[in-house]
Image: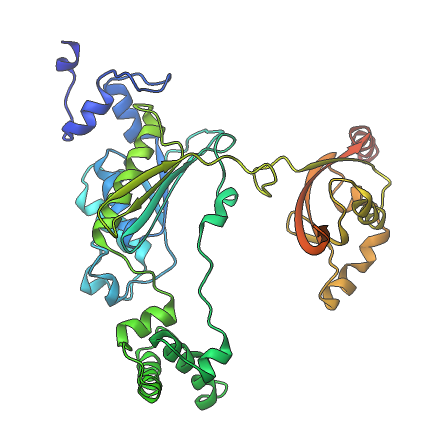
Length: 403
């Protein structure tokens, strides 16, 4: 057979995917050694996070043939990381995670090429993964085709917060005692001194006070490791879960780049708490998404002032926004509150919106205001696509005058 004459790589399984045709391949898939070599030379992958899952991802991606890997992580290595983040060693404690992870992968995988080779791409897919204990997920985000990250932000559980009255008066769990020592007792004893979660002495003090609090109310379970977890909001990690989710993310990355099989459509969940449960769900794009949604289209004259635009938002049937604040890119055009920002942006109200937006004929603004839903008032954030009538002619005239 023709494929027997192709030089085999060190990865037999990788060759089975990339060197042979199949029935579930993408239309662009062309099996052969050239595809395998192109993956190593041209594909560039950015890994965000070098924790438990990130370490597994870097290892799996490198062993799957990807050479141009970059990693970002702002954290430094702690002793508690060493039991599950296998790219780090005891001598690495205190060093930046990204630097150590990149160096360790380069040491382990001799084929890694650190030369940057820019790739011209119009679409940059993203493979997202996360784990918490025995649960995890992997998903594929393709701009313009699948829901973006913002579309499914509701999937993330709300951050756990404890009422201060519960911490101060009626603690019921070990976490309540720890947060009492961290948020209330520390300020009482160390007035004006900032708590440093990375200072072992500070953490030990919180632990000691939490134990006293727990004994006072007859609560069990306060440990030093739990104190670190509550104060630093450390998410529990299981090595096997990291390995499973990492493998799923790496496989999707390989499929996206090579086309050797259909990609995940588009959200995989893993649950190993009781037995083993894996499910794939196809989420749809949110038409009102502030990131990938089209927004509400509005046509305006170039002479419309910011104040007039805000008044129009109250009357528009699709918006009905009152007391609106307006933001263009990174600039606050007008803010209703707080008072200091209102005073700073008040002078913009009488200026043409076209000029405030840099005289661009078409662009996106985000507005925040109050709307009525089922007879109740609620805050609302909307994305608007503004088109200025005759703006192209105005811009051309300005350029001619400038010349």
